[in-house]
Image 1: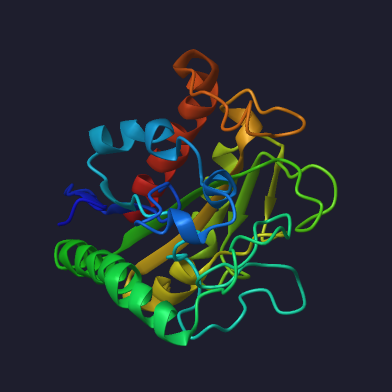
Image 2: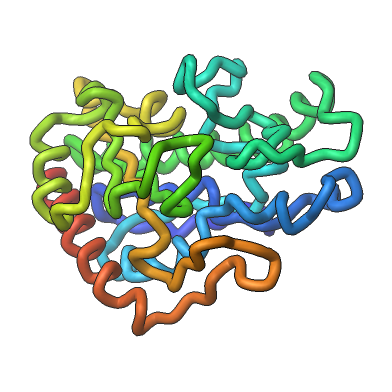
Amino acid sequence: MTGWLHIHRGTAPLIVAMPHTGTDLAGLEAHFASPWLARRDADWHIEKLYAFAADLGATIVRTTISRSVIDANRDPSGASLYPGQATTELCPTTTFDGEPLYRNPTPDAAEVARRRAAYFDPYHAALAAEIARLRANHARIVLYDAHSIRSRIPRLFDGELPQFNIGTNGDTTCDPALTAAVSAACSRDQIVNGRFKGGWTTRHYGQPENGVHAIQMELAIRGYAAEPALPGEANWPPAFDPAFAAPLSETLRHILNACLDFAQ
C-alpha cells in the first residue's frame, strides 16, 4: 500500500472500486494549463458517499491520483472504449468539455509509460489481488465500479444525464440477474447501458463464467451535492453535505445490498 493507493479489505463477496476520486496531480501542477481544470472532472466525494460500504464487509480500492495524470479506467493499450464518441485518453489531454489540459507539450509515449508503471499498473495489481483473495473464499463476487459525473456535459451526451447510469457492456460483464437487481434498487431516473456502458475496469475484470460479476454505476452529481448550473472556480466542486446526500446514499445502500444478495 502506498500513500496514493487506499485499500480497505473486507470479507464479503463485494469490491467497490473508485478509480476517479483523486485530485493529487503528482507534482505535475506546472505542466497543466490550469490545476483547477486538471481536477474538475474528478468523481467528487464518492469515497464519502459510499463510506458505509465498509460496514457491509465490502473491500474498497481507490486511488487519490487525479484522472488527469492517468485514468485508471481506460484501456492501457490506448484503444477507445467508445469508438466514434468523444472520450478522454489514458493520459487525458483535454477536459470532458474539450479544453486543453496542458501547456505544450502534452505527455509523450515515454511519459505515458512512466505514469502507467507508477500508478495504473499498481492500482490494477491491487484490484486483481483483491479479486483473487475473495474468489478463493466465494463462488462468485461482485466488482462494483463507482463513479459520478456532472449532469450536463454537451460534448459527451445530450441533455441531462439520468441519475443512475448502469453499465455492463451489454450484459457481458455480469449475470443479467445482477443487472436486474441493481436496476430494481434504483429510482426510475435510470438507464442501463446508455451513454456509459462500463469502462475498462468493468470490461476487463467482468468474467461471469469465472465467478466475477462486474458492474459500473455512474451517478449524476446532482443527486448527492448541490450541483451548480454553470460550474466555475468559485463554485466547484460543490461541498459535500451529508444531510443533502443522505437519501441517495440510502438508495446506494440498497444497491450494494442487492449486489451482496446476488453474490451470496
